[in-house]
Amino acid sequence: MIITLANTVTFGGLTLGATDGFGVEWYFIDIDGWGATASTSTPTQRLRADGSYASEPFSSYRTITVAGAVVAPDAAGLVAAQQRLNAAASIQDQTITVLDSGFTVTVTGRRQDEILWKRGTSDISAEFTLVFLCNDPRKFSGLVTQSTGLPSSTGGLTWPITFPVTWTGVTTSGILSIPNNGNTIAPVKLRISGPVQGPIVTHIGSGLQLVFSSSLILASGEWVDVDMEAKTVLAQGQATRNGYILSRGWFGADPGSNQYGFQALTFNAGAQLTVTVPSGAWL
Image (cartoon, helix red, strand yellow):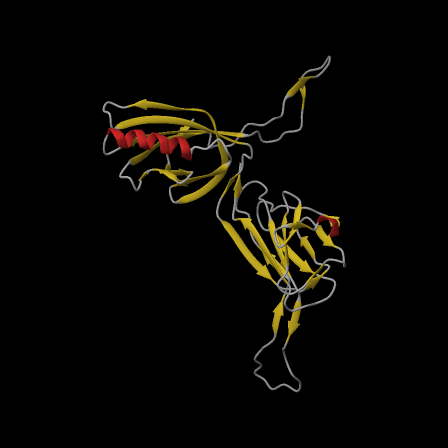
C-alpha cells in the first residue's frame, strides 16, 4: 500500500518537497515500504499431523520505493537536476529522512537498481522512481542525550536545626531515565569520561551490565566511546579498549522506560556517563 502523508524526503543533500538553490522544484509524490517489514519466519508442515512448525521470527530488511517529480527553469537545468539526483541517491549507505506531518524519522539505506526517469510533457519536467535497500529495517526519531555523574550526596542538614527547615543538600543518583517511544529496541551509545577507574554501566530494567576492569583508568580529559550495538569500546574514539571488559552485558533501549546506572570502583566527582539513544525506534 502506498502512503502519501509524508511532506518531504531527504537523502544525499537533496530534498523532495522543496525548491533547491538552482531554482529547481522537487516534488514528493509517494513512498512505498514505509510500514512494518515482513517476517523471516517460515512454516514447515508437521509430519503426519495437521499444522506446521515455524522458524524463529525476525524482521526482514526494508525496501523503500520513492516516487517524485521535478520542474526546472529550463531544459539545461533539468539535465543538471537529473545528474544531481543520480549523485544524491548513492549506492553507499546514507541517512534517508522522512518528514511525515511534522514527525521526522530516519532510516539508513542505499540505492538499489537504476533510477527510472521519465520526461514530462515539456522539456523542463520529469518524473522519477528510485528504490532504497535498508539492511536495518528500523526507523528512528531524533537522538536524546543525557549525562550523570557517579552516585553522591553532599550538604544537607546541620544539627541542631530550627524549623521551618530549608533542604540544601545536593544528590546525584547516578541514574539516567530515557524512554524509547517506539516499538522495538533502539541502539545505545555511551561516553564514559574521566577521571574514573573501573566504570560499570547497568541497564536497570534487564540487569545487563558492562563492567570494566580496575585497570581501566581514565584521567581527566580522557574518555571511552561505547557502541553497545557494534560492541566496540574506543579510547578517545580511536584505540580499542574491549580487552578491559570483564562482563560483556551489551544492551539496547527497550520500548518504554529505560534507566541506566553509573558506578565505578572509586568515587570521583569529575566522572561522567553520557548516554545517547534515539527517542524512538520502529519496525
